[in-house]
Length: 286
Image (cartoon, rainbow, N blue to C red; front, side, top):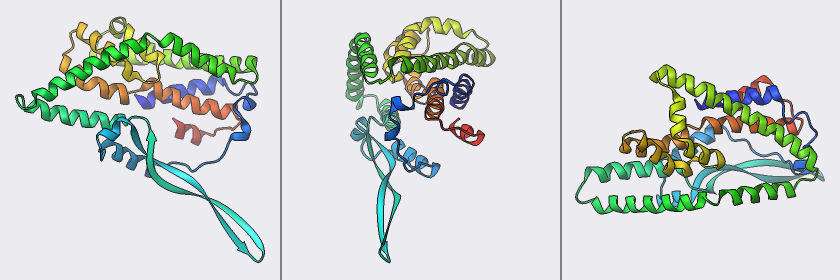
């Protein structure tokens, strides 16, 4: 489904062409564009395994393992001629931000072990339930501040624009493109898939999970919508143990909208800087 979502986002961006209609290269600082080493599957797959099995459970709350390429200059003097060659050195380091994959896997393993030892692990289970309740209340309070946060982010972005009218027109086209492919995914693709598999109407589920849907749509992390999603699924009669085990994984990895947005954003950036994409590059992005 992620692959299908990225394909839909890419097709919509190519057809509407939101970045190619306006000369907005200067808005994003063309003089700051630099080349960098490219990640390949040789780097991505080992990073996936490193994050899947973390060496420190506590570290997963703060950092993720990632492969980076650092530019290194090599100066060679030959017959009075100085040649400078830049190559990229691969290093494995960490980046700020929680390792969601490692957290989910560690939590799943600990939960399975704790659930198999009822009496001795009951304090650990009670602690996990207490932490969950505290985080639920904290997230609810944080979500109530979203309007102020959104206004602040928009104001900060607008203040950095050198050409306000041109920027807003281009970004409005990109937002319209995003709304178009998200509507296709949410109103056509998912309901049809749901109908084929379960022979049921997905729009009834949409009506029951309106609050978590709006929360996930407004934030960069869908995990913040989990408390509301748990409550909505409980009202729908879904088994709580199933929801609390499966929902975090699906929320993190079955991200159709995020996949569509990433593919669309890459294509939009290429349109903005005037870099044409051939069919092979479009397939690679998708």
